[in-house]
Image (cartoon, rainbow, N blue to C red; front, side, top):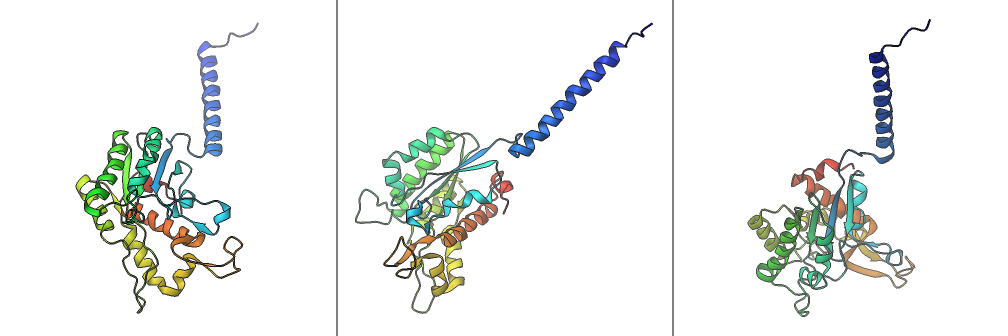
Length: 265
């Protein structure tokens, strides 16, 4: 005669099988997707040509925003909205900030680097005054990000290749970096001082070695620049990577949690 199977034993066995399948599935997801239990964070970049991405027809010209993704784990997504030639004013006028704010979500970051084209005093569509209109335009980025419960981060403009005859690196952005830092204090917004950090790097490298950072090419050296080029504002890919690393150091110095916890290189 068959023995009756205890109902409690059957139930316990079924539960073990179910939990076993769930565990296996969870591990499979972690293997395939990295960190399924963690929410992805998007880092938006608003800036100019020193930040933006370039097609192969411009290579080896590159912006630091082109490479920063590779230094984060796969819970971070970088969306580079930087465009060459834009100032804090013209970026807004072209509704590029509006486009970012339509997408940005709670817990995301908005990195803001302008200054190079805000200095164009002969171009009223781009020019801003450091301690007045420059600050007021930057504040629109801050207010917009905060309205969406995102985290604004100010980034002072990266330095140009600019040396004295004696080989000392010079400031090339006037009062714009100081005005941005002042705004950061007023609005309690973290500021990555890329101006100071890049100047320190360029001073360390000196006038000759910085030619490997910036877009300096001899005639015939690259098919995209057959006549050569001597550009003291834009970077080669190797230089853009160095600047991206300075931004990462700034993230750590500013203790941008949780973002700094996802830096892997």
